[in-house]
Length: 149
Image 1 (cartoon, helix red, strand yellow):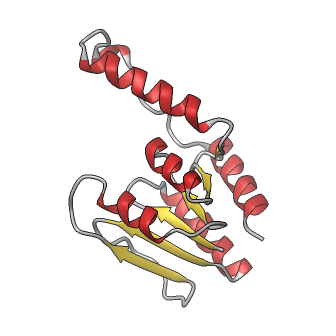
Image 2 (cartoon, helix red, strand yellow):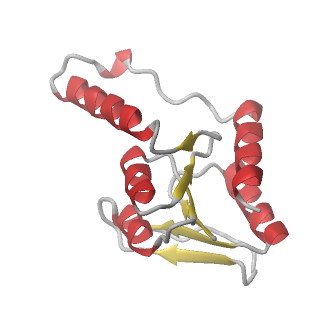
């Protein structure tokens, strides 16, 4: 198993938990983004910088991920692609996406995109993501410990 991290938007707290888990379990963690992020020197940590552009990091992760690998992402279409390749998906907030819940998440995402695109949903009517808190950190740590052994 390898851990693939959609690193453009992963909270620092989650990044630190991924690093600790990778080192504790001797599991390779590959952080993928279109700009470098700081990682401590370790043979188990790899930073892969992809070209700037829409979904370049996502495309790279989907190309490289293998069945049984774990991806850390909040990106629902990326999660769907990973699941189709036999990978596992955990969000930084500790939600595990699987074949039983990803289609519902995709449908809701597409519905909200349609609502925004048609002007039926104004920006001020949309609630942004809640700040990353202790509950999120604990849920993520628990999920990571359950999936990476």
